[in-house]
Image (cartoon, rainbow, N blue to C red; front, side, top):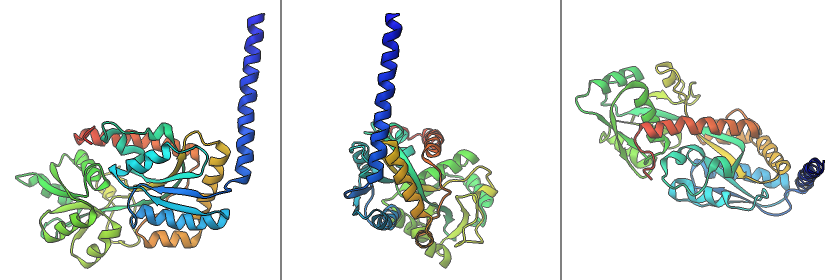
Length: 330
């Protein structure tokens, strides 16, 4: 009897404590924010993440009536900025706008990742996606994805492909294509999309996956030939370029950008930030600006749906990294 009584008291205390935390979080959410909010972008200024953060941050500043500051903390494949947010106070005042590698790829790619994105970061809103296009130098005889696959398989030596480094979309999307087709190709890493695309245009490397930002002008001018887009739908800016998915069913990938907060932030605050960011992303002028920057808005999901999405992506890209033979290579 005494033990049962103690158990009931303990259960009551725990329940009361949880209720107090929730009530406190709800109260904080009603007044949030009452000071400056920082959005950390784990890359240098000028990239797609930086553009997104500043577009959304300006709108949130108006909505909240408080300063929203974008901080670029680049380095280590985005891990420096992501770690800073994971270690920040869980109060909603430090947010991350990271790309898919910081939430998924880096877990398998890096031997000693200093943070656990699944446990230490809570996703808030899917911001946008950056589609990629499979392009070749015009000297390559292939006009379609199928013709390129046949051409690569018939090559007496494995073809080289350009990539903006290891573990980035340019690299992993080609590794995914290789795993789905059995084609053998070797990566040639560069320091960014622009220098890698420059060498494809010059004919030093025959093929690559390139993002729209640096690549669209070269595609439209004919400096490179576009064979297929990485998403399973055509792009408005390249209406005549079919999805790779038409040839390889299941090939449907894009580098997505997502807002997140430190885990442990009270759920009412998380819900408020998530709802406010999603409302900003639905504004027509923001959607237009994102489109002009070569990105696509994605269907919005709530926090719990995003957690499930991240878990699925962790498995998907972990498999790609392992098949590429680069697990723990960084």
